[in-house]
Image: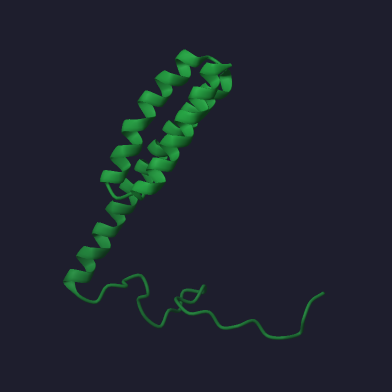
Amino acid sequence: MTSDLPLPKLRGPDPGGNSGGDCSKVANTKSAEKAARQAVKHRAQNVANRSRLRTAIRKATEAVSAGNPENAQKALREAQPTIDSMVNKGLIHRNKAARHKSRLAARAKAAAGK
C-alpha cells in the first residue's frame, strides 16, 4: 500500500553531497567539545563495565542452574564484589545491586538445599 504523498525533507547533509553546512560538529564552545570527548570515553567505559556486570550475574545464575552447590557459592562470591564495584562507579543504584545479590544468594541457598 504505497502513498502518493511526498517524503519529508530530512535535516543534515544532502545524500548527494550538496550540504548546506557542516553538521558533523555539534559543539560550539571549547568546553562543549571537551565534554563531548569525555562523553565518548565515559560511554565506552560504561559499556565495558555493564558487560562485566552482566557476565558476572549470568555466570552466577548459570552455576546455580547447573545444580552444583560448590560452584554456585564460588560464582556468587565472585559476582558480589563486581556488583558492589559497579555501585561505587555509579553504574547501578545500590538498591538494584542489593536486589541482584539477594536473589543470587537465595538461588544459591536453594540449590545447596536440594
